[in-house]
Length: 259
Image (cartoon, rainbow, N blue to C red; front, side):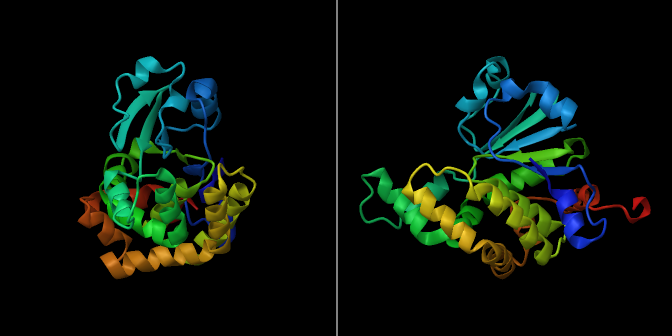
C-alpha cells in the first residue's frame, strides 16, 4: 500500500497533492481478515475501490454485507466495517465482445487471452477505455466526487493493471505533470516485477508493461487527447458533470493556503 500523494509531492519537490488521501495497493485478499482495525483505524481509510472482479476472495465472514450487493454488476458500492466498499470491473461484456471480434475461432479460451496479450498493454488499455467508459464514469461521478470518500485506496490483483489505470486517470484529471506520473509509476513497476505470474501469457504481458511503462502512460494520455479531447471530455461524454470534476480536483489538490 503506497501513499500516491506523498510520492508525487516528493517527486515534484512541492506540496502538489493533499497527502494521506490517495493510496494504491495490490490484492487485499480476504477483507474480513483485515477488518476495521487495518483499514479504518490504522490507515484512516473511508473508501476502498477494488478492481478485482471476483467477489469470492472477499466474501468470507462478510456474507451478511455482500448479500445486499449485486456482484454480477460491473460497479457498485456497499458499507463494510464503517467503510464504503466499491467494486468495479473494467472488462465488461463489451470488452469481451470486442476481443472476440478479433478471433476467427474462439472455441478455446486460451485463444482469447492470446489475443489480449498479443495486443500489448497499450492497445489493451485502449480497449478498456472504449468499452468500460460507463463504469469508469460512474466511479468518478458516484464515488470519487464525494467529499466523504477520502482517504481512498484503490486495490486489485497483484498484476496492478486495473488499479494503475484508474490512478492514471485520476492524476491526469487533476493535472499532475506526466513526468511525475511516469516516475511514480516506476515504484509500481518495482512492486509488480516481483509478483508471481499465473501463466506464461501473464508473464509475457508483465514484461511488456515493464518495458513500456513510461510509454504506456504517455500513450494513454495521447489517446484520450486525440480520441476524446482529453480526460475531462472523456468523463463528460460518459456522463460526469463539471461540478463532479471540480469537486475531485478540489479535494485532491493541495490548498495553497494550507501549504
